[in-house]
Length: 304
Ligand SMILES: [Zn+2]
Image (tube, rainbow, N blue to C red; front, side, top):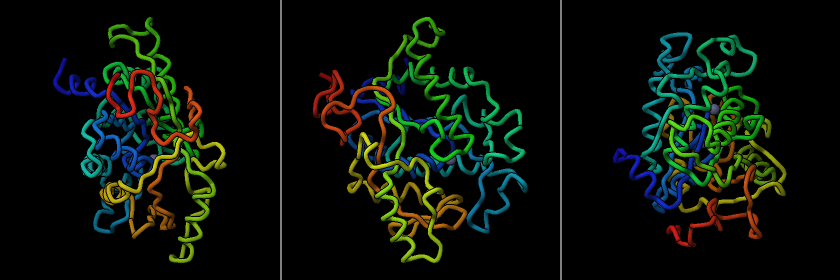
């Protein structure tokens, strides 16, 4: 066993996050990652593409886009590394290795048909790469998107499908035993944004900025009653903001707000919300800890 693997299985609590592009993890889970890393849990991020198809905000980096030098993917590897330093996450991986799957672009663009894009990837082959990670890290908790990928981006939908399929395959002892002993993930959460929180934040954004985002611009928005876990991000709000700022080509942060390349401002919400897709939440819903009440994990996170 390598030193890294040894360390990853030594932590009692192990969290795996599966995301589509560099920046999604900081926007959706920056405070969650910072919290669990600070508490000594193992936090593993798997990002499925390099985000090669993204737009670029700063004019001096505009040459990086796919239609010019096509250097954005390589650049975003560095942005992701910087962001993860801000939240203290050291285990960062790309599905199948760096550049294995290319950004598919927004739904309906010609890039969706490129044979090397993530949208076109064979589902079980892509999931197989993730099974390797699951069986090595043995996470109790997986965080990813819902079946719409939160808001319909092909890479987000595909990340959902790959994560859910990998969870199933990893638990099957007959599936590729050479990848390690079968491992069953206890809880799977989907990233969510409660509608009331978003609407309040968008009203505040509209008062301060010329152009505020619409609710449809924000992924994972659901009725408040559907929230199964709500994590207080106050202590890690500055870490989350710093991680988002590290994605220089993608995000502009201004106080408690941020904008993507469409220049529509939305609230930078430090608290992070989840809906439970697999497993039990117990009676204390909404959970304030994704690991709360899991067998073998005490209140302090020490393996019982
Ligand atoms: Zn994305």
